[in-house]
Each structure stands twice: as structure tokens, then as C-alpha cells.
Image: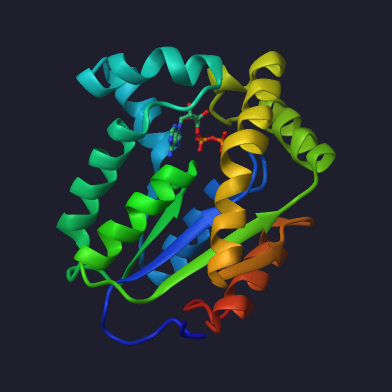
Length: 207
Ligand code: ADP
């Protein structure tokens, strides 16, 4: 496992963490400063639902309940995108994927088949109360997009799904010895700098 992001090969950053831990925000910051492509499976699914595409129609019922969409749908989506990007971009940030141990295992196989060695797995660790508080805050923020699944009862379902299905993914990477944990409490910029420090990177804009 390398300690620094550098070199020519396409790098992978995976952001894990419960809903509200800041994966989307930090993914955008990393994209801005490192020039990586940011893939948010949640964003892709929301856009597909909005467009009523085939993927959207298949995913809608799951997303609106706060459940996970089937692994097969997600894996073909990820594999298609990654295959097109590897070798052409400096790196790819995944936010919201992998979300089940089965997705994580298949992801390992996809990475191996594409010859990707450098992968940074980061857990944004935040307690339940702080995460709920952020989601509530986001609902009231002027100009922020209202997510259908940010309704209180659906948030509770998403938190439970995280505990049951995604926390085991964190354990999976911990057992592989590749998990890096970042304290996700505090303001966005502080968390961002903790991530950069963890990856041994200094941001481009000197912030
Ligand atoms: P959050 O992490 O805040 O819950 P996301 O935007 O990552 O939000 O995901 C929103 C929803 O999209 C999830 O509740 C789930 O229904 C679906 N989803 C996103 N990523 C995945 C995935 N990797 N596997 C299955 N379902 C997913």
C-alpha cells in the first residue's frame, strides 16, 4: 500500500461512511483539488430517476425506501465507467460504493482485472447524532437540493441499512489492512485537510 498519491497510474480513492458523514462534499473537494473524476452512485441513481431512464425505473423503488439497489445493477454501472476511465484520468473517487461486502469483493476483482494497484480506502468516521444533525441541517440550507430520501423516516432506514450492510464493508477493508480512518467531525475544510494529510497530498490551490 503506497502512502502518497502521485505517479502516472490511475489512482482510486474510496470514501466510506454513514449517510451524513460528508462523502459527497469531500468527494467534490478532492475532485476540485486533485483533478480526479468523482463517481457518486447515489447521484447517478438520482439523475437516472429524474430522467426516467431504464436504470432510474429499476432503482426508484429501492432509493425512495432507503434500501440498496441490487448489486448487479451497481456493479455493471461501475465496471462500465471505470473501464472507460482507467489510463485516461489521474484518479477516480468513489462515494457510496462499495456498499455491501459482495460489491467490495467484486470491486477487488474489477480493480485487479484493470491492473489498478493504488487504492486508498478512507472511512469518514462520524457518530450517529452528528450525522443526523447534518442531514437535518442540509434540509434547511437555502439553495440546497431537497432529497426525497432525506425525510426523517427514510433517513432512519438508510442509517439501519448502513449498520447492517455497509459497516461490514468497513470491517472487510480493515481485515485486509488497507483501511484509513479520518475523523469526519468539524467543518468541511478541516475534514478535507485531514484527508489530504492521510493521503500525503498537498492541495493544488495551496489551501
Ligand atoms: P447517503 O450515503 O447519504 O445515504 P447516497 O447518495 O450515497 O446517500 O445514496 C442514496 C441511495 O442510493 C441509497 O440509499 C441507495 O438506495 C442508493 N445507492 C447508492 N449507492 C448504492 C450502492 N453502491 N449500492 C446500492 N444502492 C446504492
